[in-house]
Image (cartoon, rainbow, N blue to C red; front, side, top):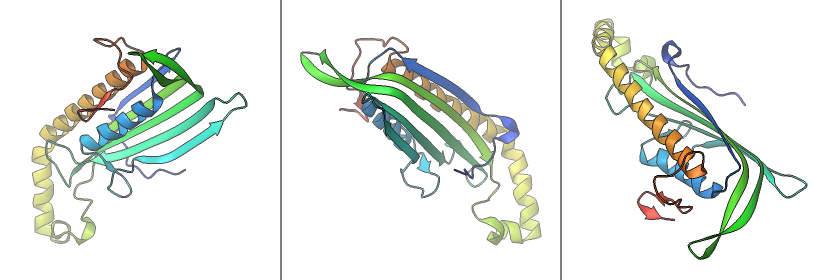
Length: 205
């Protein structure tokens, strides 16, 4: 599959990988949490501008009944700190499961279906300078030589501040995702008792 995504500016990007195994949690709820997190933070599907972040999904069953799965999330958004039309944020998350099985455990006096196996997460977040690319050559700012001069003069003036704001915003998203996945999947101890039914947008699921 060919991905038409802009390259990180000056090779600046946040990249991390996480592998979780020998633990049990609800893979479906974690999957839903990631989807709802992106939606709540204003990320958009790259192709449609909606919330259809999953661009690839593979689900293969092994001879022993376990599953190997691959899911790709792709998204983009305007930065919160301004620079709309000049800056764009991008997100990639590849998730792979190996030999995942369903098992029942007792949780708060009830049987809960959880998953165990090996779970791999590979994430990248970065920004790209589009410089009014959304309007392209039809923009008055691009067709008129005087306006084009002032457009780039304006952009060069605000450039350092907006870039710094983008980096800070991306670091926040990266830390939130990494820490939550670690905690929920069992790679990092939770601050309190482990809740297999995690809160999604303020409601218990």
